[in-house]
Length: 302
Ligand code: ATP
Image 1: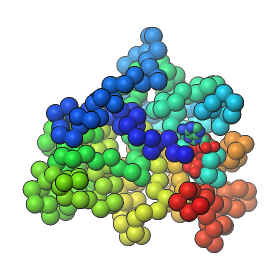
Image 2: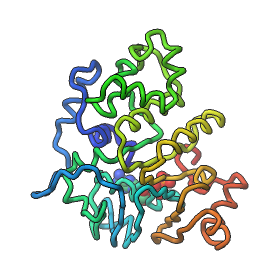
Image 3: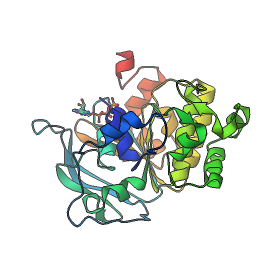
């Protein structure tokens, strides 16, 4: 179960508002208007310009009271640091990351950003400062420009173009019949998986949040595309606190820190080299993947 793939809640969650005038959005409006589970606390404040020091302080969480998924998680991530979470399927990597934008609230302990309990920050303000890249990119029927601007609706034309270029969409735009005005989506030009990823990356360059969550693709793209996308993701992560939900160990070698999560919590943490040398869980996962044995038995290969 992947919480990031749960439909509209996520759209509402990541983008604070939605483009009312854009065709194709009518249906979503009604859904987005439904009451969210998590609301602002009394006294929650608008806090902008967070640096992005993220700390988990004795965090516990369960989707239901009968079963806890996370127990007493303690982890302190410095602003700008890239931390990759690895571990067996179901250990709680995705869940842990989903607590940061408050898709769910902790049931014990607290999560702070720059020392402030995230429940004391207004949800809009919190989510403005978090960008999420996931495997399934949400595109709506509209122009390429509108789809990029979805990252920040008040962006200027220059900002949109700059974000598109940073996401390496320059060539695609040049090849499109109407450039940025080209209609994409179901009845327009269809984009490839890699191109969709680039639109998602452009959105985040535009939004420019201090915190980034990368829910890594499990498969889908061919190796060359994957490498190119990975390069763009590395650029996107530059200067941001980045939490990577890693499914393939190869892409996280360069993370500042790797955190191994098992059913029992955080089993180990360190750099790739340190964890290989330690000869623990990470090393075993690494050896298994090198042999082509999948360790995260995702549903797509179960
Ligand atoms: P994977 O590598 O497969 O993505 P993961 O380490 O990210 O796994 P999670 O997806 O966080 O693990 O799942 C942790 C546990 O919580 C699992 O037992 C899972 O079944 C359960 N779970 C995840 N999402 C939900 C949900 N929305 N409702 C109920 N249980 C859930």
